[in-house]
Length: 180
Length: 419
Image 1 (tube, rainbow over the protein chains, first blue to last red):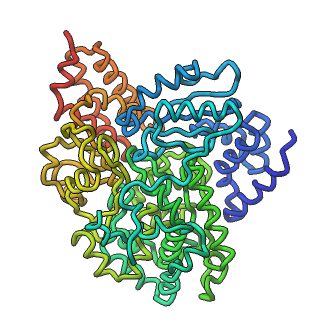
Image 2: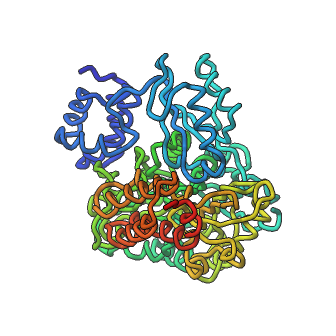
Image 3: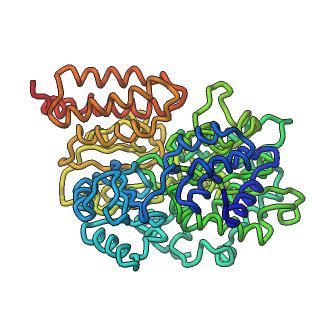
């Protein structure tokens, strides 16, 4: 298969970050980057990875199926990963789930008819003090309310995404300036 | 919280603009402590860290200096792994270090690497942390370009490379041997013990120090103010402040850097502004979802240090405090909690792989009003049969909270069981 040059260059960088005799260590980061570039890891990509890393195909499949962020089927354009762990639920994530399901007209694991959004409920995304939170592709959004959720979804629909909450807002005393 | 700002050691630069950029951070003294450490003998650095009372902030609370001291004398090469796989539910403080002061972390990891004479550092960031990963990668590149990372660091003759490791969505890779397996390109199944310490046998079978982000970010401050001063910011057994991740039913959730051993009520009421909507406190999960739940009464005089929380029947863990108000149903909390572990069990050990699924099914059945009288005892017994019977601590991490929810709030479960 044709592997894009950008991915080949990226793979060289990844190999460089490990001792030369430890090429196998590149497996997870390489799959992560391949998925970023190609949308998912197809059997063809698995072959390329096995060959370039120098491991068996079954080894590639084993690692690929272990990590929940790696996928064998292409995700839709916008992957909405919505947290439903304790802190998010304490902040009302369950009501918001019903709202997002209604807004998108889909349930957990489904894709909208226009192929734009896939909804997935996930466990703790590490945004507990800014709950409820979600990721849309690589973008982090915190302190979700029904209104904010609507704005974010509409933003992606119209091609003008709401800027993500980056960096994470400083809440708590770590955000206070101290006199030196 | 002006009263607590005196102990803002680690986070003191977070709110200052541009701290994530090397040029700005340098003006505020970044990498000065690395210079100082490089003038010390490696074993002197370890001695200072040991004396500072610095304990692991990832969950286990193990003495950092002691861990560094476990590296066998003649075995090379050696490695340092920074555990940035922050995934314990409730925990969200390492994210801020990665986003706001990545050079502090890199400096701390380099000082650790100097102390144990490691030649490579891997910063293993969880896959979902896309933005923090970008910031850390940029910081590594900047530090390399300025000669703080790489060959012959600051003319010392010592070389150390820093690389990013990639998580891909697996809680188990926060377990230190799971993390190492993942870095070796395998599925992140925790290793059998013995050998007990990666410090002796770790990455690629070589001595490896695995420390949490917060733990390592404290190291430059220890070099700066000295072990004795650092110790005074905590308790005699746990030096320095702690970053508390506060979430749940409080008015001002957030991350608070406070002296280790601070009263829990100070954190919840003075810092957190008390319980949301004027409700009453029902319970607190004091150290991430793996810790035993504490009732409001048990929280009354609780101090937040390792020993005190253990004495109260729970653990400080990652200092992730989740506040539960009177309107929250504990059986519902049980479903949220067990769902996490059922999803994250790695599948290696039967009691955990099968048990977590059954815990979730039973908890769901009870919550939905389809529970049978013996379900509650079955739940407890299941937890009992997971506890201590697995290779890694994930087993007890689900068993302990399960047992504590049932023991302390049994009446709430019984009220849902009809027959």
